[in-house]
Length: 504
Image 1 (cartoon, rainbow, N blue to C red):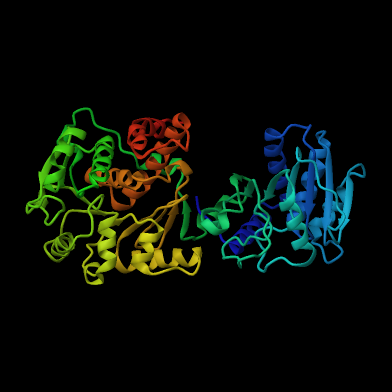
Image 2 (tube, rainbow, N blue to C red):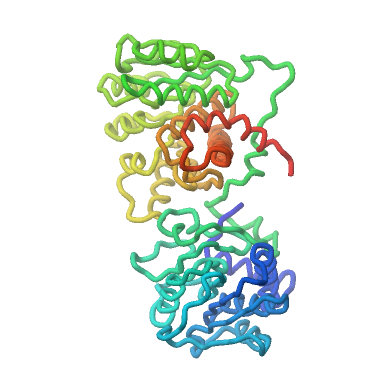
């Protein structure tokens, strides 16, 4: 699914109006119908609705929704905010269509306005995705009023005050929605920490925008869906054997950090790799052989940290480096030697491998093409420097992937996968329970296992990140988010594979 800019969304509306053809007010009616259908499915008629409408088309959506809800027996009250100024033609038409039985209040100030019922639903229709400057005056007052209420807040298309594809100024008034119902496509702002905090849960409501436009329009931003992940997943052949599914090498672990590499090893095996070898310092040999009996072990010359890579790397289809590695100078030299030597197998780099890259920029210049890097935001900042805001961070991600011809999984609530072509993919699986130590090591193992099986670097990232989050979701259903630990993720990987393979 593509993510469109606010300008592209307006173009999609215009194209649909011209090509279908359909009037703009009837397209608004269609959107309001989809909105009300969702609301009535989730909120019973005993819930009063308080609908705040601004002067533009977002307010028109709210007015149309008010009429449809009223027709279906819902108790509806409408607040017109700042509508003594210029209003849109579609707003005007829907205001004329509003039944007289609906209570309508014109707000030029919120001073003295009573609180709404905490059992009710506030529908935010002040401003939509076309907003380009911070709200002020009565609009800022209305936002503050809405945010003070205890009622459930549902935003129409986007929370008022939020920009669809640009950062907001700190302290700008923005509606704090519990739920956002976005028309046809999600907005880029939904996927980023600073802006996404205002969105709450979000759902996409199809409203029949012209498919030809959506197919032809270009966007560097995409949503990773179940359908896309399903299309990547390869079935296993009946007459295959362990050699059919690759031999992976994981390199990591150090004194006190052997858990990280064992988590990655379990995950690589659960992902279906045919053979797995793990190289650890000598102190980790007994731990690995006991904790992961399915893996073969190689030991370093040193006891507490790693100082070299095996010489016969050409027998491996993927090399995963980083979990528990540590940042000893011996390990840095080994990594530099690896990068400066003959082209190694396909690489997955995480944790201290990334920190070593960040600490020595000369090593980074020798990063092999098509490598996969999996930084969390702080690790990415060490690599590329601080970002001024979330949208700037996306630009830095695109620049890094292009410069080094690599793939980067920037981990987070909606992990973002960057490709050398500049395309970014936002994941939709996962939950806050995964914010615990070791879950990144599990992801490294998953990606290493998939890459060794012959998946392309992009498909490895897309499928691996989706499965990682899905395993976390399945684990949270059974264990709860607060109790989730990293080993739950590889425990539920099998269930994640099964769920992904299900046809709906």
